[in-house]
Length: 583
Ligand code: DCP
Ligand code: MG
Image 1 (tube, helix red, strand yellow):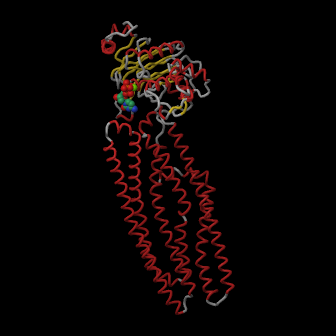
Image 2 (image 1 turned 180 degrees about the horizontal axis):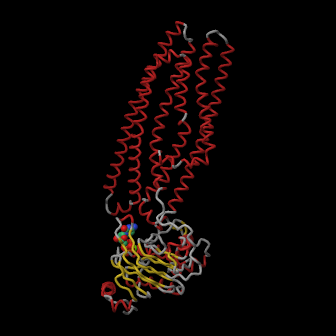
């Protein structure tokens, strides 16, 4: 319930539609409840005394009411659809904004597949809840209460006769609703589980093939599928015993009405029309029951969804601008400095992955970070654009503590080539120009040339307009890396970060990329991450990272002379010597 309350503000912009929808719903109840009265009139004042005028006029009135009722029902549907769709659209937009605003830490925590479910199925469930509530939420209870009142008004003694039966029926309904909601909630959870398994399976389809784990995946899906079906069956079994029971109550009620009402009609204390009207009210009182089952299903689903959507909103971005944060001054020389930096991932139990990091680099320099897999290289460079906050210590860019400036102004100065080259579906041109959408073709080409991508792009039939599949699936690893280097070079960043971004290209191409980049590097600070020593040979400063600690630092020459660890890496990788490179 609490979760739902937080979503109420979403109704506000559509309150006119929601109110209209409720108003039409109320009108609908009144129109529906008028019909049995009119039937009573046709019988008592028309048919029995043989008064044709009353028969005709009442029939015409009934027709009119039916027409009106149809019109009002259409209105109600339209208004409720408007409200539901509006709420869903706003909710999706806000969720999307929220996810866009997520820091890396939040993204580590929230799973992609589940976020997608939040934005699609969960929002849909809430839309459905809004619409169904506006269509039958108030109608069902109003119909029941209204019918009951009219039954009493038609004939208090007959209503009294029915009282025990009505009590039993009400109890049944109560049980029904209270048992139904939790049952539906479980079904909803099972459906969720099914969705999760499905999402993961589709995302990992290639992997499952590669490891011949298709059987395992099918088994996993089968279990979730079966579980869902079993619980659905349980709910249906419950419903299928409840519904005939309720029907039995209604029919028994009808028998009582006809029997007791019939006797009273013979005695002359009740008219035939009254008996028929009474019977009709009994029926209208029971129809909402079917609506109630629909409602309790929708409510269970909607509540579960509201809770989960609420969880997304309740996860604030880990990295946030300080109140009143300034923009990083444009004319500031982009130096980089880290002091006593410690860092840990919140998601990974909280052990430090970086200890006591101190480093400094100035524009024009290349700072290389060398280390084995898992040493903490990616973690280290992710601190520069403030993708994560440090646990202790400061990161400064241009002398400013990056926590005091806006993320936007900081990131505008930095371009990053992530370890996993990710491309969007679209054209090559769009992908390279991602960070500077208004770039000219000449600029795009220049960036591609520097990244040694121009040649292979030109060789494609459609050149720069060639299509890129989602995630860059139609390019090789090395091609993707070069495209993402071009993308980072295009906006001429002050700080360029390359995270092992030449790992999939051959050493010769790598050298050419480095030479081309060196031409424009005069005022740029470059941070290069690598496992391969050949990548870092020419760096001004090399930092050797080991288990999250700086194990050695210096230029290639200095390290070779002073650091046994570096010497060891060098011997193991380039022991045979590299053509053109001397120690
Ligand atoms: N880690 C984590 N949560 C993340 C990312 C990493 O707990 N979201 C852990 C796994 C490693 C440690 O942090 O133990 C360092 O990981 P890095 O990604 O920083 O390691 P590298 O970049 O040095 O490794 P590689 O060369 O494989 O990219
Ligand atoms: Mg890494």
